[in-house]
Length: 124
Image (cartoon, rainbow, N blue to C red; front, side, top):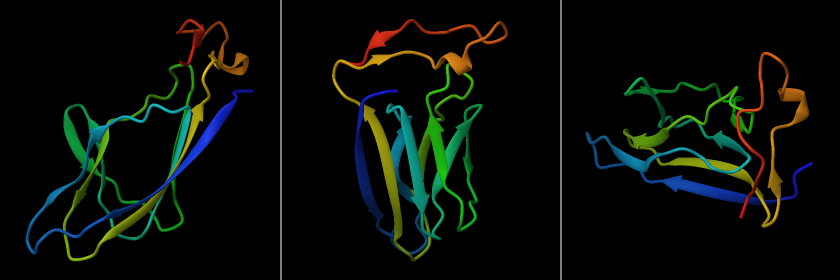
């Protein structure tokens, strides 16, 4: 069990001027142990795949979840790009290990086909 603190961030991305397509949030990957993002019905989330940006179309009942996985899942580079005339709202919840927490792959994710990829380390 990882000792962590939670951070909840409420985000509002303003609609750009009419006809414009502009960055709402710069490209990045999330660093916490896990991230859950819930969006409203205004699209804007894009992921980078092989150097190209792909706009995600999420259903109203979906959310994005990224968790530490011994390399089985990679944190995807993503950004928010805004167009249209509506503001975009989202809520992100981050699980961030507290100082002194030893980060190591869960034993359930290590086997002969999936050896431990990273050495255990102190988060801070």
